[in-house]
Image 1 (cartoon, rainbow, N blue to C red):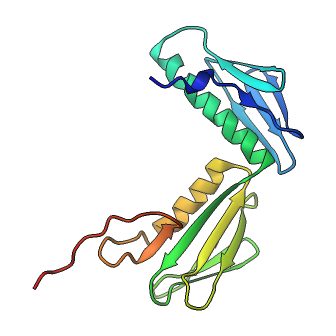
Image 2: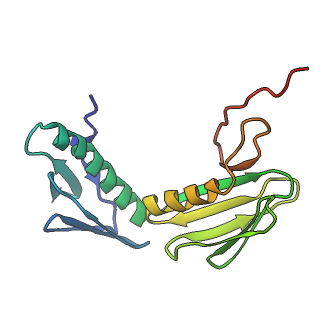
Image 3: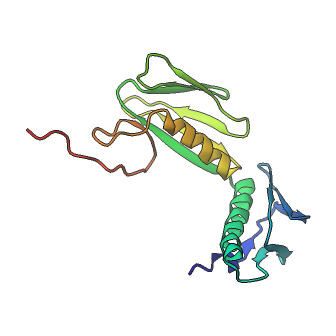
Length: 180
């Protein structure tokens, strides 16, 4: 059984953690995040955040590790930030951005224009001879993952040629084509 909830979360320099009425606010150089916590106790001691549970019920055991992981993600997000990179694999697939508008050419009859949340910084990299890459950066891990998933859903990678939008470093399960 995992004991991840028992590990303390170290608060780095420049990050403040405030706890009031079950709501934890984490502030850092990149932004501010708030999260509602219930059924666990959160304390700040000696530059560490400790998550403890009052009993060993199944619900509290599950939330113990969950809330510790959420605290770690919040603290890392406001101090370092989170980045996801997507790669467009396919002939004629292109990506460009003007500020927060992401323009995708994915082989459909029209381009897809996506307005990205203002908390997420969008950057597109296109080099000759290489697949275009979309970089998403933010202090909110959940928001970066949600935006990346939404972009990936426009054209999921298919198993035969591998064409589509995939995460950089993702290993796709490939299938053999027709056999003659």
